[in-house]
Length: 99
Image (tube, rainbow, N blue to C red):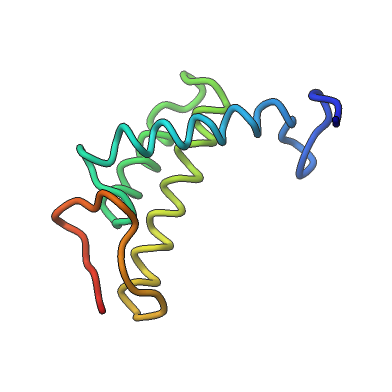
């Protein structure tokens, strides 16, 4: 097993990476009924929360929100241009789905 204090990608510790991954899963499931998932709106809200919070929240939570928000925006854009179809689970009503 790797040491938990080693860094990944030169600045992220393995511990923060594991915490961010678990936190992303929880945040995504909890936020989906409120703001959707895989939409431009949900991505903007998550990235906006990271930006506004600054250093007021732990690094692993900011990382989880940033990764999830970026994933939402990428999914929405790829869906809009027809590169992917369908929707991740629990889409909000503002979702744009091209089939």
